[in-house]
Length: 258
Image 1 (cartoon, one colour):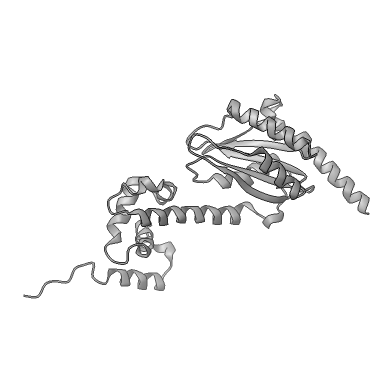
Image 2 (cartoon, rainbow, N blue to C red):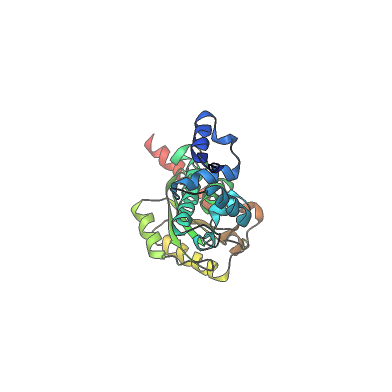
């Protein structure tokens, strides 16, 4: 008596045909994940692995934010699969950051503390380790450059004051904004955060480039360091006097050209 064909026979091809005939939006999370895993598993049932990953991490977001070592604790997930998912999470964050945060593109005007915080916050979406960024602004409060200045462990980062100063000077920045995160923690600056901020501010001031603010981000909130250290009112978040000064200088320069 001939054996009955396995229900998994031809399953991948059926899934691909379904995708070609419809839209990815109509697929459940585990189905999307299952099909992504085709690219790390040439053969075999990835449906079960997809279900196991979602059960272990709760969601697609949880999977893409997970550390590769934790991903490999799931039965069937090997090193290649874990690295693939980690890279997928990172490229998703970069896509989202570039698409949403730029607004008007690289020339978005970041002339309020709220716009600055919104622009920078997206750099830390899903980050499980401490990261730090420097944002360089021109006289019109538009981004000149936004670059990572460190990538640390879950407990700390190492930031080079010299690297920030040199790049700000080379790019002819009118102002600098710093940001780093406290993954899994709260947006409260530590004494080390404050002392580092003051050192960077002093170094930049020698070049005539003001440090506008240094933001600390957590998963759901953020806090400015400079305005808190200087005991300013909440309404003056993110060193608004510096914003005013920079914008005044910009207006003067425009007037000189007329």
